[in-house]
Structure formats: C-alpha cells, structure tokens
Amino acid sequence: MIKIPGNISLPKIKNLYSELSNSGEDIIDVYLPKKIEKMDLGLLFSYLQFLATWVRDSRSGNLHLPIHTAEEVEDYLENNEFVYPSIVLAWEKEIVNADGKHIKGDLKNPSKDYFNRMDFFDLKGTSVPIYCFDHDKSNRGLSRHLYKNFRELANETTLGFNLFNAFKKAGDFNKGALRAGIKGSYDDLIAIIHELFANTHEHAKTNELGYNLYPNIRALQLNFHKKPINKFIEQFQDYEGLVQYFNSGFNTNEQGELYLLEISILDSGPGFVKRFKKISDYNLNISEEVEIIKQCLYRHNTSAEGFSGETKGIGLDRVLKTLDGKGFVRIKTGRADVFRDMRNNQYHHHQTAEEIQLNDFQNNSTNDFTINLAAQGTLLSIFYPIEYIKL
Image 1 (tube, rainbow, N blue to C red):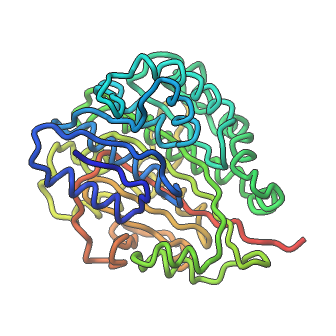
Image 2: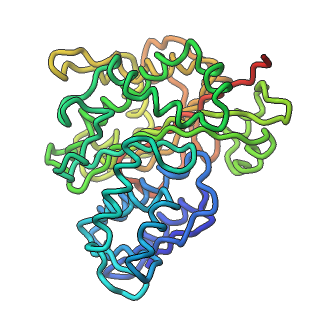
C-alpha cells in the first residue's frame, strides 16, 4: 500500500514513485490523508501526476478515504482540494472508507455539489483548478470554461473572457497586486494557457498508438502564492535552479514578500517522448528524452491545423517568449524533469532545437540529466512573478 503523506512536498512525491516501482505487492492500494497541511507551489498537480501514474499501473488497487460515515464526505471534499480530482481519476477503481466499506454511492451527490461550486469559482482559498476528465461522458467531463458546447476547444478570445473571473478569484488575497501585476500581460497569459491546453487537446487524449485513454485527466490550475523570498528559498533548498531563480532580485512588498502566479497544465496522456517517437517503452537514454522535449519546444514544431479551421499557435516556443525575463517553467514528462529559468537565461531565437538550454530540475545540470522513474503524461508548471509596485 501507498500512503499519501499529509506533509507532502516535491521530494516526498518523488519518493512515492519509488514506493510504487519497488512494491512487491500484487495489488497496490492508495490511502489519502485526512488533510494536506499546505498545498504549496507546484504540489497539487505534481501529486495528481503521481496518482495518474498509479491509476495506469496494472497493479493499482483501491483508493482509501480516511472517513467513516456518509456525513463526513462533504466536509472532506470541501476542505481538501486534492480529494475531488483523486476520486474522479480513480472512479473505475473501488473507493472505500476507513472501515473498508465501498462508498461510491455516498460520493456521487457531494461530488456533484463540489463540481458546481468549482465551476463557478466558488471554492475556498485562491487556488482555481479546472478539470477535464475525458472518461466522464456527462457535461462535467469537459469544462465549459475551456470548451465550447462541451466539444470544441475555445479560442483565445473566448478563453480570455471565460477565465477573467478565475484570475479574479485567484487574486482574492490582494486584488490590487493582481491588477497591477498582470496589467498589460493578461492577453499573453491567456495565450500561454491556450497554447498549452490546446496541446493536451491534440496530443493527450489518446495514447502513443492512437487509442483513447481511459481514464484520462487534462487540467489547468491558477494559484497565487505569497511568502517572503527566504521562505521560498528554504522550501526549495534541494533545487538549485529554483534557489537561483528566487535569488534573482525581485521587487517585494514592504514585508519582503513575493507574489507568484502559478499556471500549471497537467495531462495523463502518453507524454512528449512516447507521443513524439510513437513508442510504448523508454528504450532510449535520458539525454535523448531531453532532446525530444527540446524538439517540442522548438518554434512551429507542435503547431497544427485544427479546431474548426483555426490555426493553433506557433508551438511551445511562444510560451518561452511570453515568459522572457520573468518566468520559470518546469516540465516533467516521462523520465525527465527539466526547467527553463527565463529570468536568468533569457529567450533568444535558436537555429536548431539542440541549441535550446534546459536544466535538470534536481541537479541544475545542462548535460547530466537525472533518470527519474517514469511519470504518466506531462506536467508544465509556470511560476510568474507579480512584482510589487508601490502605489
């Protein structure tokens, strides 16, 4: 069995992959915690990528919730943002309570109520998750904020309109900082979201051989984070690249706090490498995997016609240009976990994909990449500073 820790962190999520890989059990159950103490920067979707990896494992068993009665379900959902997506992603598994009782019947109505509040950006806190579950054939499967008529991907203009209230909700902690911080950048941020989510629409609904994935998650999260620079550095002390990023001279408020907008896009598709190479196993070395990620970042490489004749973007290269001088982007797909610090390593046009610099997320190297245990799908997490402007 695997127990999700209540004090979860990126290193502890990495340990979960080791537990899954090294388990000698024929059936591996997952136990959710009563709560997660702090769902900090980048954690929610990192956890969900692991859960998707477990769901796809042939040994995955039951999902256990730490509740005893039907009356506890609503509070457990309401107070823990990781619970709803965990339940939906694992719906084809057995879901049991702390007494071993099967409780899907108890979960249906509270889950619908939770979805409705989420759909109107009415959840607690400043985290705004928007989920698409391709295996859910109800109108809750594809988000109305990302799709038109629950079928056709919204264009950039429509997406900007649909997500305006999502940004307002995420910025509830300081509306003035939000307005000042993204003034003039809103359309660019929407362009990033559209580009990245359009890639999930095109590349992450089927596996590397073209078969529909079941179950499957594709999702967006907006979240604002606020803490002193030294606390960010302390939190990510094991990640030299992030420490360097947070030491790069941000404008903070009078309390020394930095405001960060997190934009995370997650899918449980085949991932960059399997999709690009149309392979089902990782029978290549890690440097080759990173080169494939660079190919996907290269200008025009992921562009395609689609969506009722609309031309989709100009590739993930556009994302790097939009983040230039400000943002940090992490890409975890397959066995690779890499990043690009657009503040300290600014954008310039590359003649070839091989020239693009990516750093290993664990050791910060540009040529010695860590071989991680394979994760399902792709996670792109963008950290975008909302620098303090004294009014």
